[in-house]
Image (cartoon, rainbow, N blue to C red; front, side, top):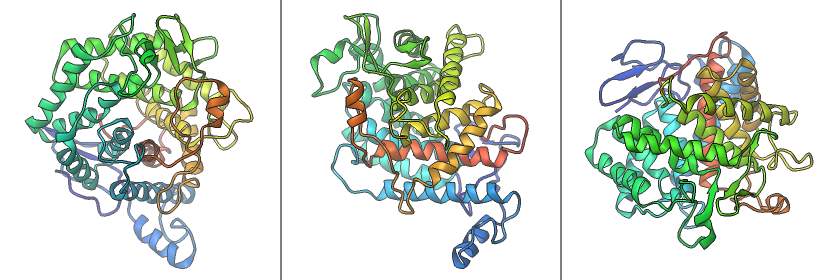
Length: 423
């Protein structure tokens, strides 16, 4: 298990796997975590004097130092809120095996995967041990927690975790409801019967990422191939090349899109593409089209951002409010896409701009402002009228973005993408 860093500002992240420990910028088997010197002291002095951590003695570029301090402070505030929350509301119940808690866990997983802090790993292990007996199946929404279990299997090698992953791999391949074109129907217990004919833009995030990563890691060729097929089906069915964005849904019997160009829905897709592309071989038949659509969508989103970098809840509606989860998902995709060499430097700049903007929208106790409620494919008016709320999925999205932002801020002075971990 990785050791906790002396302060949550990591220059090099150590990720323990079954075979080796990887250190960014160093050789395998290295056993060092390097923290940014002076930041904790500067932040503490700044809080006492009323000045920023940068002006109170941290070294390097002052604006970058202040930004990384803010990102880290906000990240750990969200983490503390998430791990301590006690609620039975569906969107805040951390002990529910479903997509909302799964997104929250994904954010914690990304913090550990990128920054290497042991507190995140300990929380994930504790969650799985507490909740694996209550795991459920029947929806793509139930697969996302297995993505976190798969990560723990790779990190710790616990065969109980592999068996859980095998269960969800079998469900995806043999038991999931399929649409007429072979896609994973977006059904769930209590949902409308007509959902069995519908593809939704978030399904590649909820299930496709698990299928690709576990299929590649095990390996399970059937699972990997079907995961690629799911990405292909959803890209072909939902992407509108004329607009440069994804529809929320597609009705496979009516043979047409449903819903509209929902901001967070597009965010789910670009985030899942940055994850999924990391598991595709360079010569895979899906890679060219997936990269092309990813890059085109990101370019379109860049053209729609507000002055402070955010995207609106409905990106094409000029008077719609800027929405935090959509913005953070695109920020995550922009920073990780740049880091992996998929996007030009303009997207690093966008992500860094968003890191400053989003830091001001997160309270000291970890509450994220301007996060829209979940939505089904609907009319434009319905999306705009959805209330804002606190949720585990907002927390997880923000954690993943802030972890990526910390790495990006630290490497932003370099001319080429810098990978913190081989993820």
